[in-house]
Image (cartoon, rainbow, N blue to C red; front, side, top):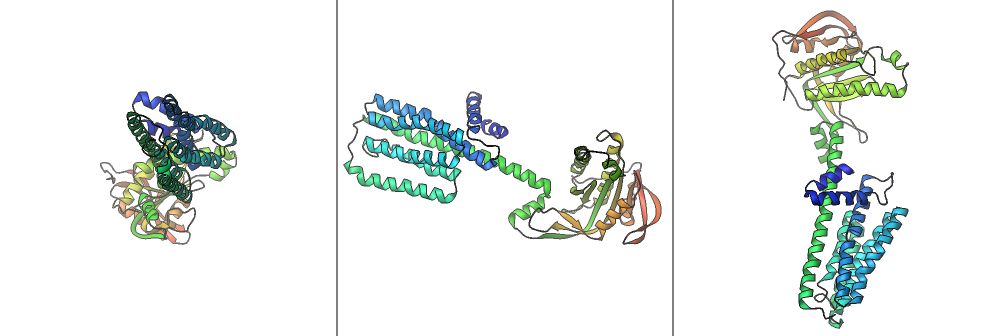
Length: 425
């Protein structure tokens, strides 16, 4: 949460941001549990920030009322100043947010009303009951909406009750200037606290939303994630021209048998992160990984005329990256297969969905990889016809392909001299 705190305090002047940041960090440690969700962490932090953060004001109000000669009025904010730290200590020990939240909200609702009654009504108390309006506001941030309705009803009931008993209250006899200035202080303080709470809450909410958006975009293409957010339905689209690449590690199974599970995962993670960087550079779609197999598509979900060219370019760069470094202290070699053609792409199911591709073009791309050779980029005729003017391709004759019979295949050996691949920006 420290990064989120930095985001909130960045907009403040340095001499304010430093103590505010330290206070927010301190409040964030009170009553926390490792099992708390981010939402519960935010609720606990906001509760402590409000309750403890207002203590200097309530102590000041108590001192001023006492100096003005109204000890009963001074005792009410003074009681809050004493009881809130005790309640916060209990909360730090029990971590019981519902109890802490309820007792503090009840105090914020009732005590301003009692203070108003002791001073003689709305005007004589400088409309101090406005502090009670913080209760439904804070409830809206920290509780379910149905509980907020009850707090709003309670606040309205107190307002009506105050209006009924107003004629029978005895004014405390405070000077007119005192009443006027306290009116300014009460309204100004409540507005400032309301703004601060909303500012912090919106900043945290935006931070969580950005993290959720980034996570979703790491799973699905942007166009697909936007469609799913707007409408929960099966998403499928036919793409007439796309290219699919499969790459996997040669002799992966015997190598994996000599490694611990953690070493194996670390090695694959290192390899796939390297490939992810190349895929992102060329604005392609990583579809999924299956064990040691890495699948990429071009031309979906957004069509692009250079889908075959950019896919072969990616394959050459993957080949170069693997040859230039070791992964997990090992020299690896890959088989890469590419095919081009029509596909159906989309998201199906209701849980743990992924963006996937279906069709004969996908199956043939997988066969090009599985029937390929070490260090080779093997392509079908459909891909060859699209890239032969840009890349050097070596004919390998025809091979028997499972489910498709005999097929002509080519190996891409490099870029043609003087040829350039135009990539989509």
